Length: 335
Figure (tube, rainbow, N blue to C red):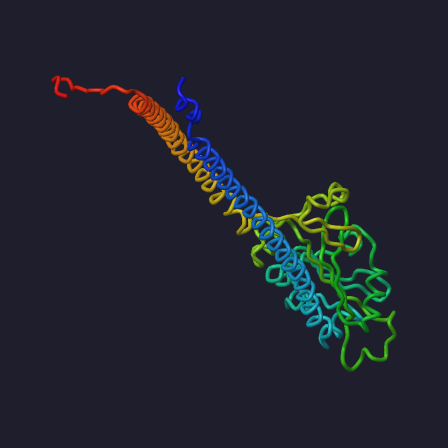
């Protein structure tokens, strides 16, 4: 071997394929990371929208129940603080005035939905009642299913005879109850708290009424669920609402603007991610194949160049060391 051979550096394959593979891997990793981050942000946005929608629905439902109590108190006040009601219902009940003349009759059920209208004497005896728009004498405690008359009287007395209201839970039946003294501007001031007759309006919040109440405040499919079952797992209840006699759990349609994100945008985003990754893999595979071919061609070219360089060095060494003339002829034997 000549000295020129010893000086030739060992052949090394170009590392274009390796560099290309690292670049493609990094790009795929970044692409997947971007898509996963976007999906995570989508879920976070959906959760935020759901929490906001639930909070808004809870506030609206609370306002709806408060407005319902305010409405029944206003109607009761109009009928109880009335001179004619004092004259015809307090000392003795004038059924002709109350029922026949429809001053305290069927219209309270057909127009306002009050299932029970009661007039109680000072000693607590039910003297007049209209149930579901029909005149029939049924004691208030019997209709309600629980004796809360003493509590109502104390609350009305603390409110100076003005109308009070409460949501009363009895045997899984939720009832809106309002009570007030039957008063007259001229004749009621001299009587003591225990001398007043009591007028009571009551409305049972049936599933149909709850649903209608919810629709009025854009709370769809409002209904009650079992509070006893959900007490240990309150996260399943949309709203736990304390009432007289227990706690009521309300639930409603949980659809929110965030549901559109998961229903439509998330599948499209996942599909786009899959297509993008597959397309990137195909392109990366083709690029890696071309890079490998280029590396092989570059390796062979470099090998040929080094072989030619070795040959030229040998030829030069021979020319420089010989004392004779060296003639070179081509294929046509021309010198």
